Length: 267
Image (cartoon, rainbow, N blue to C red; front, side, top):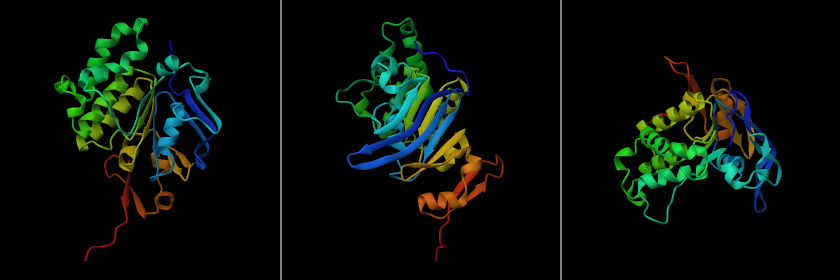
């Protein structure tokens, strides 16, 4: 059974990580620590390597060189059932070949715990995950009949029901409306406050600034900077990384960084 990590301790680590897709090197020497009790946002432009890094941390992509460790052990040394107790993964897109109802999809998240003493918590954790993501009202509907945003929330509910101490979420807000984007990031904060380690790929820098404890800005397969949003979100760096002039302003009430594209005036 996985231990509950101490707040602030390293639960997942990448060291000198390089990942290739064919002849193309996507990640070029990544050093990154994921700590229990914090939300780490991976940001950067398209093709920077965010999703690849998340997949490598999940042990879904092999390293060409370097290492990835979860819970103090190289990911390749964990048997798959044991790894599933320690990390849960939300991919960018969720697709199912059969018309499972929503509740059954969420219940799939409990599969790694079958046969353990924690299986007694299945019903409660499934219900809690559905309530948190606001999908309870359509629990009996087929997953394939849902809208894109509803599917995204059901997929997140499956991950939450899995109750692993490491959550790896790839663009969980991409298909969501404003309300549910905020809902998802609040859930991330709540899981971190409960002691979990949360890694989330985000395109919205405002969400990253508002909810992440740390951000890692990826650029051309490397981490350009890693630290608290207020320290690393800087006009020059972001303008260079995104190849788009931006201004970083302080929110007038909270002081959180606001990243605003510099736009030419309208005639």
